[in-house]
Image (cartoon, rainbow, N blue to C red):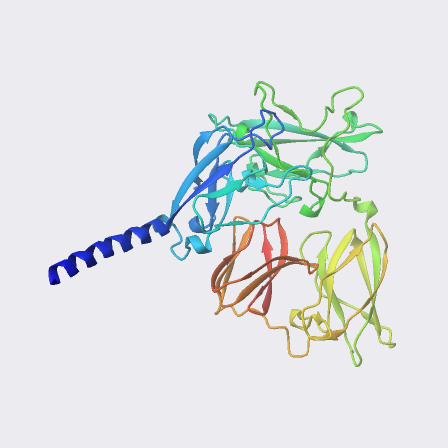
Length: 437
C-alpha cells in the first residue's frame, strides 16, 4: 500500500510539473498586412515581438515564424524572459516588422495612429492582428550611403526639418552633426514657386532599405506630419534622389501628399500673448511656466500684480504655449483644483487668439506630493517611461493634462511608446515631469 501511494504521488508530481510548464508558455498567432502595394505601411517582410518580457529591446525582438505571407506565429516561454519579474499574466507587448521601433505596429490610414501595448488574454493561442506598420523593414542586404531627400511642401511651410532612424530620431531642430547632416532641411528658392516650397537634405544611412524618417515644419514634434513614417520606396537604388512626396521636379509641381499636424509660422509669425489670471484671495505673487512652441519648459515668469485680484503676464515669441500657474517660482506650488487635486494643463494657441483670461481655483495647500527618488526608479527606454517600485497605480499625462495611460499594479510599469516631449507621471499619488526623447 505504501508503494502504491508513493508511485501515485510521483505520477501526480509529474502531472503537476507538466501543467506548470504548459502554463508558462503561450503561442501568439498574428495576421499581418501584405497587400502587394508600395505604400510603405502594408507590406510585411518580417514580424517580431517585443515587450516588457525583453525589456522593450526592439533590436533583439523575438523573431516570429512565417506561416504564409499574412500569418506569423511565435511561442513565448516565461523561463526565457530577459526580465524574470514579468509573467504571461503581466505581459505587455507590441509587434514590429524590423529591429527598431521605427517599424512598430500602427493604426490604419488615415494618420497611422500610435497604438497602446497589447496584453495576453490568458488563452493560448493568442490571436492578434496588425493593420499597418509605421514603416516597412526591407529584409535585404544593407546598402549604406549618402542620399538626398527632397520635399515639396505647402507654401505656408517656411521651415522644414527631417529626422529618422539615420540620426537616432533626434528632436526636430537639433543641430547635431551626424555624418555631415543635422535635422534642418535647406530651402531651395529656385525650385519653389507660388504653389509650394522646396526643401532638401543630404543624409547618411547605414541601410537605405531600412531608412525611416518624418518631416516637421518646426523645431518640435508638435509640427510633425500627420502620416506615419516615410521609408525607401521599392524601386532601384541607382538614383540617389528621393521625391518624398508628390513630384517636386514636375512642371507644374505635383501637390504634396503629406500634411502636418501644425505649421510653424516662422519667426515673423510668432506673437506676444497676454494672460490675465484671477487668483485666490490673499495671493501676493504669481508665476507662469510651461512649454513654449513644443520645446523645453520656460523659466518661471513673474506676473504683474494688478491689485484687483488678478495678475497679468506677457509671453513673447509664442506660436503655442502649454502652461500652468504657480504661487511662487517653485514647481511644488502649482495651481490645483478647489479640492486640491491636480489641475489640468492650459493651452494658449496664438494662431487662434492672443489674449487669454484664466482663473486659479486654489494653490496647493499641503504641497503637491512629489515622487521620492529613494522609493521609485523612473527612466525612459525606447520611448517608453519605466517606473520601478509602483505600489498601487500609475498615470501618464500630457503636459496639458490629457490622460494618456492609467494602470493599477504593484511592481514595474512600462508605458506604451510615446512621442518625444514632456509628460507628467503620477505614481501612487505623487507626481513628476519626465522628458521622453
